Image 1 (cartoon, rainbow, N blue to C red):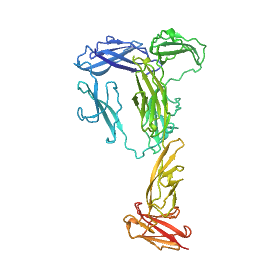
Image 2: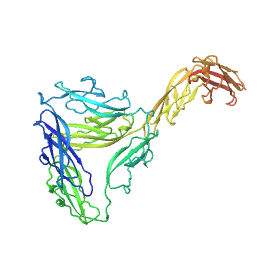
Image 3: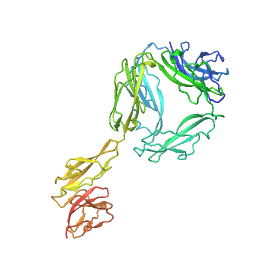
Image 4: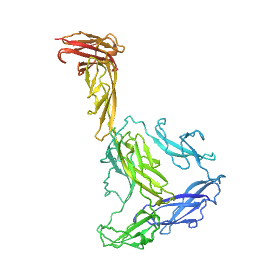
Amino acid sequence: MRYLFFIVCILLSVNLFSQDVVSGEYFFDVDPQIGKGKAFDFVASTSVSKTLDIPTTDLTPGFHNLFVRVKNSKAVWGHSEGRLFYILSTPTTVVTKIVSAEWFVDKDPGIGKGTSFVVSPDQTSSLLDVTTKTLTEGFHNLFVRVKNSAGVWSHYEGRLFYVLPTSTTTSSKIVSAEWFVDQDPGIGKGTLFVVTSDQPSSLLDVSTQKITAGFHNLFVRVKNSAGVWSHYEGRLFYVMPALIKQDTKIVSAEWFVDKDPGIGKGKIIPFTAANTLSEVLDLASAGVKDGAHNLFIRVVNDKGVWSHYEGRKFLVCKDPMQQPILEVTTQLCAGDTLHLTGKPVVGATSYYWKGPNSFTKTGLKVEQFNVDTLQSGTYTLYAVRAGGTACDTTSASISVFVKPLPKVSFSLMSPICDTLKSVALTGGVPIGGTYVGKQVTNSTFNTLNKAGSYTIEYTFQAKNGCNSQATSTIKVLNCSQSSSVDEGTISGIHIFPNPTSDFLHISSLDPSLLHGSIHVSDVLGRSLVHLRVESVSTTISLRKLGGSGVYLVYIYDSQGVFVKCTQVVLQD
């Protein structure tokens, strides 16, 4: 037998004189006249949400229209609301299984020519990894279709999505936020409130004193450290009319489960008249059966005015499942692996996890590799047993915080001469980290008079316990065999006089050296001067840099490429 499952959602504008929706009816294609459709029941309310299980066995294959209308407590019927649907022909094979699936973006490549992904009859949902690197900025459509064991492909199902422009800033933080009601005052002109990347949620204190009674929209947008504002995000809210008198007291209350018996006909809650109420209810007296239910409460004041009822969902289970016990590391660093583990629950036949950013995975033990700060949030393990009722599912949640890695950079002055016995390592940012590498001891690189290239790693640990690394290469030149070492394509560089008693002249007619740089260090590797080459000839006073001895002069071209190193002797 074929059925159509239809969800009816009705929301009426509510004011002091609004009426409850009390009944409804539906019909197919042709209107049988008001009151003569198929009736359906629900709890009277100003808003209704109900799932209808409608048989379609009397309908022919093809397109049809389903219409729904409702009636309020004044016996006034609303206009009918319709939805188009399609009845498939009765298949020759009653039961088939999904065996294959594929997806494509925007343009259909042809059945069976999309990008395939794994989906099985026992797992009707699947997480797609869709790359957007080749897509242009703007709106696109993602389509999915599946094939059954009879080799028949379904119609494709599509969803619209948007590709943001590539940001020139790889990461940024939220530094400011603002809100406004109904009308946009312009970017940066809303009411500011404090929110940071480390605390991305904030409680807003929005005054409604100057806002008229009725429905309104609250909008929020944020700005990052690059000065870029986000799109605003809005939520609908309702402002109640101002009460004429505020000093009334609650004098009576009543409660009911699931169906409203009518005002004043619920189960009375005995209490002393007061401004607040706290009471324990005996649900057993209401004959509540196993399953999911709704508890409603309303109160009446000393003026005889009843409030709207307030409802909460609850569950009654004779044989409740044990809550899962979770074994999860709640704090880890970006780049680590998040291990989500739970202990088996008696009676459970399947498990699945849910988490931030639509994370879903089946199994009792799952992993997320190379996590980043976006994976911070609440993770919930659901344990399910056979039966299918609300009592056959239990869950437990835990909050996980992924700490950001520090941003680390590291650069070295390179090359150096092997005549330097050691060089103090600096250049790691932020400072305070450690240096590791061949011939490195206590943040000092020892040349050991060995020419060659050496890779050194700098590690910095932040206060949150997370660390990052950066590497740099230092090149050691064979200066012990020659007082001057040349590399690169620049020729005709003259450094004279050598030895000198003070001034040192450096000249070259090669244009590649113009806008290059000259570095001078002592034999301990300490940098003494760093200047830019602005003409064909440069003069340096070595006497101003220190006393007599050996100095090392390094020359780089306009691209920062090393071309020459010379040992210069300063005499008395």
